[in-house]
Image (cartoon, rainbow, N blue to C red; front, side, top):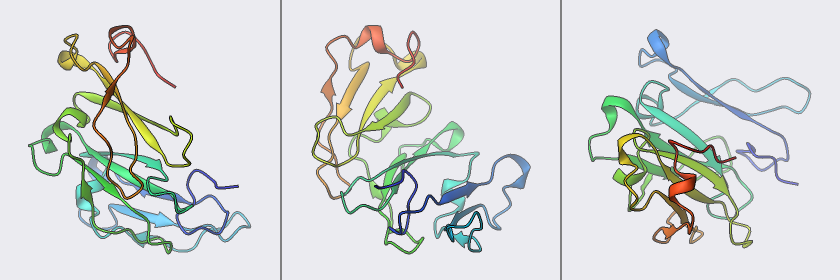
Length: 177
């Protein structure tokens, strides 16, 4: 059974420590902690792209986006970090607490944290984590309010498929769990 935060494939739940607020100082901003299986964790492994993933500027959303049994994550920029450059990227696990460089999401601006919630699940039963992009705030306009993005198994996703009842499921009027 895969645990939802198993970054090294040993069957144990690991976690990412993501600093926020005044703790963000360029030192240990984001670290991966691998479980030893006895309630103790190995020392934190710094995320190579830690400043871009700190809690002031990014949400981290976990899933297995390439079907290798390792937990990966989406880095979703928010706040003033949203600038049309690297707004949403997929980081695939190397299986040792380290991740490959981010793969830009093709529809990144529409999925940034200022205008969208991302909800992960396997929505077509192929064993890959997909996500729902749920618009919120001023982005809700009756056009593309909620879409499903199916994983291609390599950190890239198909174009969004509109939810039939999208307006009733937008982030201003509904929570999706």
